[in-house]
Image (cartoon, rainbow, N blue to C red; front, side, top):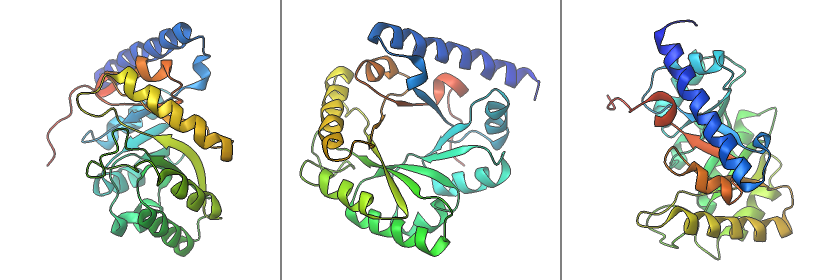
Length: 233
């Protein structure tokens, strides 16, 4: 694609990539260690195709009813990351297009994903990250302390899932540095038992620098790439 919107997204992409590079320089890290996941929530499939034409192949969505038709209408080489709260009855749909689910927050959801992946006869295992509740508030989503390791064990034990690592969102009212430092500690403890679970999905448009400074490997960026989201229909 080559139009005004593609040029706009291209400028935004260059700015975001420079932010990632600068944050990596400040942290003594290689920018190649950080994957940009473009969050396309409420933006059209055409914008996803534009991102693909600009070399962004990792795309994140948080609603299955929006992600499924976009996945069907966009280039097959894209890697779809499901990043929102996932209802168990949507597991069958999500496993049909997602490469990885960042927001695995309960043992019941692990079971639902396993069941859906088996029935779908996926050719490759579904990547899964344990969503961590950084403030241990079980009502806000995410696994609380004491459950995280059990979930990791359950994911790792399944031949149809692959334990990738951990994900979190900084809780409201928390300084990003405090939130992402805690997530880094959780990740380090998990990797003692599961060395391959080295993904840390953390950081968005407003706090990606802090997340990168604490080891984030996947930043989930929406508005800084695509602008303010149009309202949901």
